[in-house]
Image 1 (tube, rainbow, N blue to C red):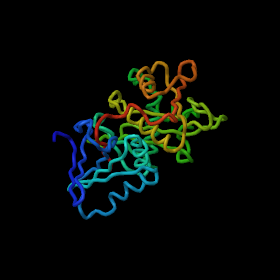
Image 2: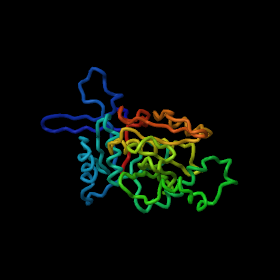
Image 3: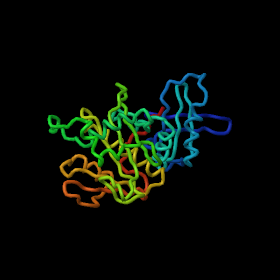
Image 4: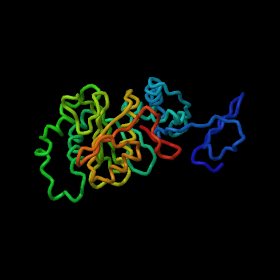
Length: 285
């Protein structure tokens, strides 16, 4: 059988075959619509609780699973229609998840130690254009502005959530995205209402245009949906055409003209994100 992944199990009562749908005849009875999460291995046989650490947050999120263990590692299969929920739940439990191989990064939920990096990314979010490099003000000057500081000041309050992108090979952080709720009395630039998180997103200058922004945005949308939010919003400079196109591909619509910027909103109540990677397997650790 020519396939990247397949498993054959024989017991006294049955023969079970797991393989990609593309190699299954259309008229063959089978259970379709699964996606595989591969636990990064190899795993030592003396390790305890590996599957439990993965299945517990999935169970709490209401995601049923089908597990397969091999000599080197474990695979957890979930239904495709709850894949985004599963990935968000795993990240929320502290696992890193790499969706596909194209970006070369693993996305994880941020922890307290990432706050200084979030401030760095807030600075980059404002100065996104490579043409502005020579005219950038010092970070301490720019980030002293109240309209920017409130995106991170006092980080860790209820409903604050962030994800960080880590380069697989070099291990360094290369991007981040986060959301926070603002009151009408102190709105963010992309403010819609007090129940819609306003997001910020940035990628390190040398890694822009490589798909990392899209991966971060996917993770943030998944997390917001899992947290029960029906929409998220943002503000984007009209001159930032690449970012605007990315947001439009991700179902953001222009809600308000703010002069030199658009306020955009994405509805999360219509189901999972549609532009997910097409690879059979995801990777988690």
